Image (cartoon, rainbow, N blue to C red; front, side, top):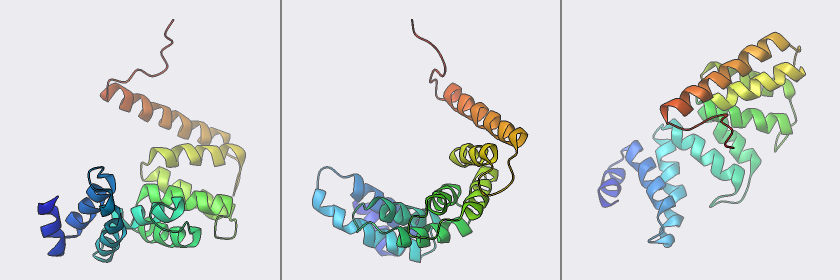
Length: 171
């Protein structure tokens, strides 16, 4: 942790981010948790998209900060504009549910589509859902099926790569 802190203090964005993760997960010295947000903010200011997304999730969940969906959305927008698929997914959920913003199913659908087309598995699943239900646009059962099949194949490939059984009934 000391080496990361040294490089973070020199302005290395990735080291700032990694240090924030280490501080956040440290059980040895819980008092270090107060340093997490400042390092994340510095990392985001240095242009690290992963930090922008992480800040958004902290505001969305109220982890280490006051829960604030408007702030979460602002940080997700920053990361989503850079193509961060998980940020696009979370921002879509914010618009879908109207959390801190006016509910906008059309915007949610577009964000789910961007997330899906970027290869985010959660985005693929949500995009399949909105296509199947016709949320925020025209219903398209065929495309929903294609998306769902794609998600299932990706999940199976992941399970095979990680040696995790999927869909097996233990009797």
